[in-house]
Length: 171
Image (cartoon, rainbow, N blue to C red):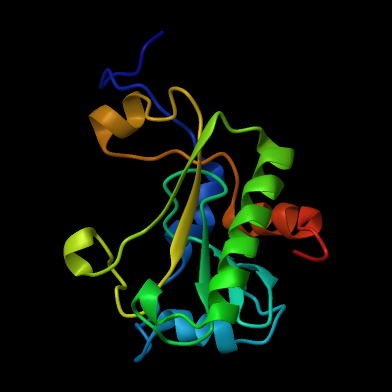
């Protein structure tokens, strides 16, 4: 028996928490600086790992499950402006992100990169951040292509907990 309106239904009860929440007013200043300065364990803490000069956080608007960003605490826009310690730790944490995601979810490939400047696609171009995006063959399915909708199989908090639990103790 089909529905009277002829539409298929995709039930996503986990999205109810998002639908019911009120969008907060944007806070002034750089969100990456606020996240970097936040105390670990906050209610909306999506930080996976912290180092001396960089940290790793889940992307709030992920392209795929496990989409991470590695970024310095220091508010700097250009890769060339990182000091040697920041550069080394950014590279080490990027390698740790790749290893951790591979161990947990076995992606077929990755997109890893920086968007330096607004014209390069950097929506928050004033604070450098390197994306680590796991990819699977066919991950751009009909929902993404036809409906412009990305389906994600896990809530961000659950993804964060899983990644943090498997993050290596030292890079």
